[in-house]
Image (cartoon, rainbow, N blue to C red; front, side, top):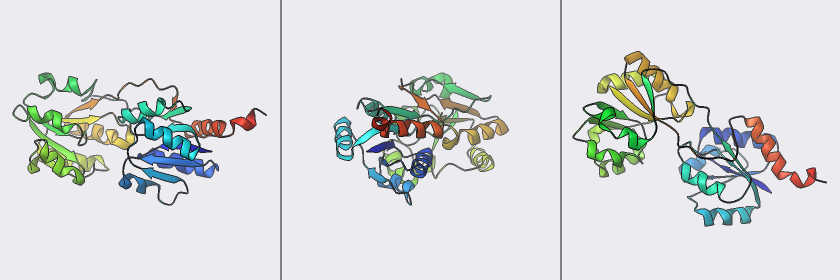
Length: 251
């Protein structure tokens, strides 16, 4: 009997470590072999690769999975929706939200952002990842854009209409001063990011925005009706223990 951990985030490694310390067996699924490296040195099983609902059901049967702890990225809604549809007991690990202060502003979704009110004639740095970039292609003549992406996504970004000189192929800076230096170099007046919490660099971007007076537009997290959620690792341990040892508790 095993806990299924949906991973790929820094918090998912912390959860795996805590489950290991408590003697609770786990299996983690991630999208790519690169993400699988996050769990090096830990004793659980790591399964890379995308899963549809049928693949999930097969995984559940094959490994006698008893419950799901979903620690996927806050914007990875498809995997969360499929996991909830499996019928297994499910607990969502949800990152704590970062309170926004001016000049930061919450935007409900990407469709809302793609309105003249937000972007027309602006100098914009996008820190949304590769998947969203194609939606900005029609805007290339209406605003000046740069996009920060992982180096591995450069070719894909060029395919969807971004020139090499518009791409910052690097991970996010780990401190506000480095972030400020980039924004000043580009001369941006607007930065777009996601409400990805602390691990997503929102506090660093907020500090840089306040220091420079740059408008920070933060795309809100998608609203999903999770059956239960927590940001407390102790609650996750309690949930996992109750599902793995449920039959003994009933004797």
